Image (cartoon, rainbow, N blue to C red; front, side, top):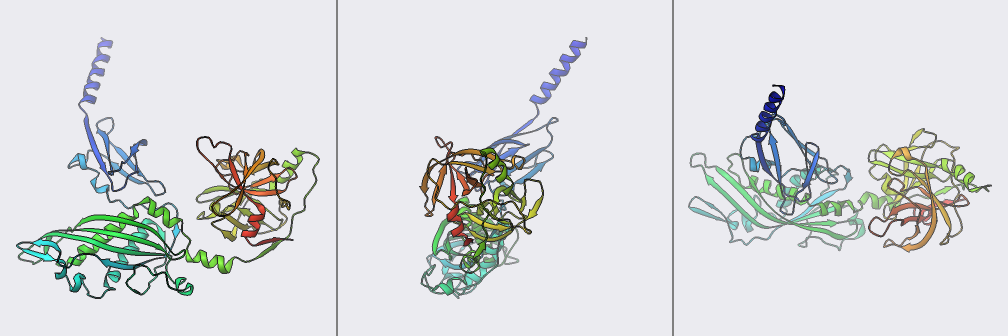
Amino acid sequence: MKKLLVSSVCIIFCMMYSFAQKHKFTFYTKEQGIMIILDGKRHGFTKKNGSYSLKVEFNDLTPKHTITLHRLGFEDKVYQYDSKPEGNVTKIFWDMQKEKYKMKEKVKRTFDLAKVRYKIDPGEKVMKLGNSEIYWNMLGPEGKLLNPASAAPVKIFDKNIMEELKICGFEMEEEKEEDAGDNMFDDSEDESETEKKADIAIGAIIKDLKMKGDLNPYTRKLYNFSVKMNVQWQFYDNVSKKLLKKVSTTEEIYMPRESSDFAIGVNNAFSENFAAALRDSSLIKAIKSTDSNADKEYKAEVLKKYTISKTKAKKFESYGKMVKDVNPAVVTLIGSEGHGSAFLINNEGYILTNYHVVKGNKGLKAKFQMGFELPVKLLNYDEKADLALLKVQGSGYKALPIATKEYEVGNEVIAIGTPETTSLSNTVTKGIISGKREAKNGIEYIQTDVSISPGNSGGPLINKKGLVVGIVSLKLVGIGTDGIAFAIPISVALEKLNITMN
């Protein structure tokens, strides 16, 4: 009887499960490469067409679901469903397609909507309204909406641009420039004028615009009104004087309420197209790779000269005693964006590291081998060389002496740093200098087979006499590249950071 009861319960359970509501939703997005996570389990990435099929079940066993959208470098979007959503389940995620993601990393750049041009034939039909047809040249002189003045579109759309950039996570000051000339961007200005401009100039060419809608005969307002716009965006780096990226977008917006103003729809369509441009990961990457005018002015004016007293070299009875003596001079840098390694070069608290370790890493502190932490101050940096000079308050610190002679291939070296996790601080690895390699930035790097991992960046490369010969910078990752790491020669670091040792 007991066995029969158990069997009956199992059968009923299986029947309930088999008849449970099973729904295959289709996730739509405007961007490929977004990871879909359902209840903590990764499912896959959106494809080229921006869609992904996802099977979701709502039943007594799983009445609730959490769906997370993960885009690399941006904050996650999280949606929670307590029951089966109403409506067309195959398009339940349609409202997510225009999600605006915010970057995790704070990027400070100034932007300027420099030019807006219309490339639409004046006689082109843009809308059919009842029995009437509306052509581009009917929307204003030369087809200019709202105002015939050539600068009007810039003034109209500028606020939209700035709002979308803020939503994306850019920290910026709004800068205005007068429209000068017919060229989208003019490279002829002298340097003094260039420095006054925003870091990134944005140009927009509106190539096509179509509107749909009906006219309410009583209110004389538009309803069922939509605007479809095609825009070519140009992003120009005012600092390095080069075109960063061209992006083409085509977006359509729908007005939820009646309106008597064509321009509101056009304005919203322009904003939606710019938001679509910011969903282009290659564009975001290109903007992040640029310098700001603040960086340029810093390098030209603020990169002051530092004269630092040398740390005297010692003689050691054994290799082990040398390692034990130099280790306390290496610190772990910990901040909001993670950790890296660094080392002191004199007892007054001057520290060297990689710039990528400190860039955007707020609340940065140096953690010493003994366990105490001190806030650090950024003194000088060179972003392209990936170098930074920091300082902690106080004196009497353990510091590393600097090698004055050139390193040779075959020399024994050790690296000290914090690989992977802060619990592995002051890890020592040993190897040799295996080569010299020149990079695109003109620096001749030290190639070594010393074992390094993420977190080692910024730590010292030390010879068998306890002298610093380089700063660990990067490691090659890929098939056939195990055991290849690179360091910036210490002489290059001192030169780039304007440091003199006496």
